[in-house]
Structures are given as structure tokens and as C-alpha cells.
Image 1 (spheres, one colour):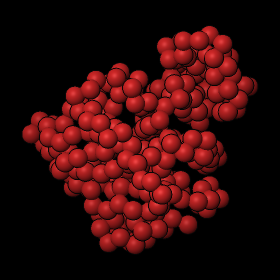
Image 2 (cartoon, helix red, strand yellow):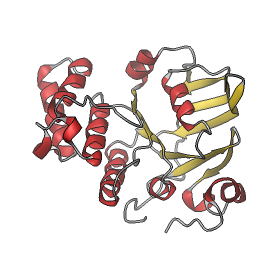
Image 3 (tube, one colour):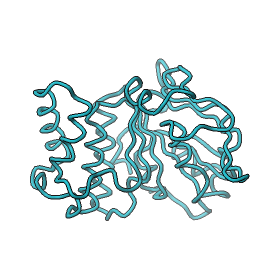
Image 4 (cartoon, helix red, strand yellow):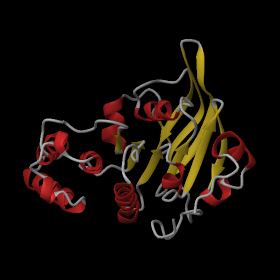
Length: 259
């Protein structure tokens, strides 16, 4: 684990809350999903979001980006209340982007065409657009497959393309929904290093990542939040969480180790 992430951000000289959820509650068809959930994501950190299936992790992502509005509570980005601000304004004004759990690429377009499709929307200057596309191809080592249709790429390659597409607008807040799903060991390792490098390149950027691969996620997280029974039951650094009684009883189990 230490090889992937050599340091963890646990304290800040000036703590800046990039994303804050305050007293969020939401129900679907009279079934409560989240009940009075509050947390802060700090500028510059990678925060993991863990919990059993159906606990509301994807719902939290949808609330942050503005796809759904909670029944109660408020969402803040850069200390500004964005609860009633639409999706496109959150993306443009606050640099918010999401890498979805599945999809995220146009299957019948090549890697290069996918990047161009997004670049033409978010980058007005043609020279800057072309430079950014080439930069992403180099960063994610996609040169050998840049003219290959996405449907013929491996799972790891498609994930890299979807992240590269999300980065075209130089976002300040990146949400990743189950990025390690379906990846083999080497592809997972590559993606872990890619995510850590995103933090290293821009220490003002924050990443919020949800995944069921707890070990893989904790290996790169500065801090993590565990949801269960509609609420946050534990939060802290990976080493703190594996010692937490609630985290073990409600999610990890007694035998879980991160090394």
C-alpha cells in the first residue's frame, strides 16, 4: 500500500472545505436512503466512500453533481450553497466532473474521437484544444490505441479514456464511481497510480471515490467515509478505520486487513 501512496494528507495548514453536505436526507418510494448525513471533503485530498450495496453512495454522487435534489439538507461547494444550482453551472462555475461507474465513453468512437468530442465543448481555443488532447494521450499512455474504437479497448484502457475525458476541462472536483470495477490486478495498479498522480499534479484538486474494492481504495485514500444503515458510521484515515469498531462490525468484518 505504501508503494502506491507514499504520504497521506491528514492535517492542513489551512483547511479548506471543497465540498460539504449538511444534514442530507432523501427517500425513494417511501424508503429512506440517507438520513441526516453530513461531511466535508477538503481541498487537496483523496477521500474514499465505502459501504454495502444500496447504502446510498451513488445517491451522494448524484446529489453532489445535481442530478437529484435531497428532501432535506444543503450542498456546498467552495463554501457556497449550490443546492438549487443546476448541473451545468456546478460543472462550469465550480470545476466539478464525474467519471461514471460504467460507460463514460462513446463505444463507436475511437479514443482520439472521444477526447475531441469533449474538448470541442470545454476548450474554445483550437491550439489549446489540440495540445490538451495530445497531453492526455501521453499522460494516460494511449498513443498505441488512440485510433482504436472504444468498444475494442480493454477495461483498463476504457477507464483511462473516461478519466482523460473528465480531465479535459481541468476540473477541481473529481467524482469517481467504482473506478476499479472489473479491472485486473495490473490495470487496478495502473489506475491507482494515475489517481495519486492527479493529486500530486494539483494540490488544490480533490477526488471523491466510491468503490467496493475496499483495499484498493484505501491504498490511495487520505481519508475515507463508511456508510451503513442510512448514516455515516465511521470516518478517518485507513489506519484509523480498520481499528474502528463500527467500521468492522458494519462493513469490514473482523478479518479485514489493508496490508
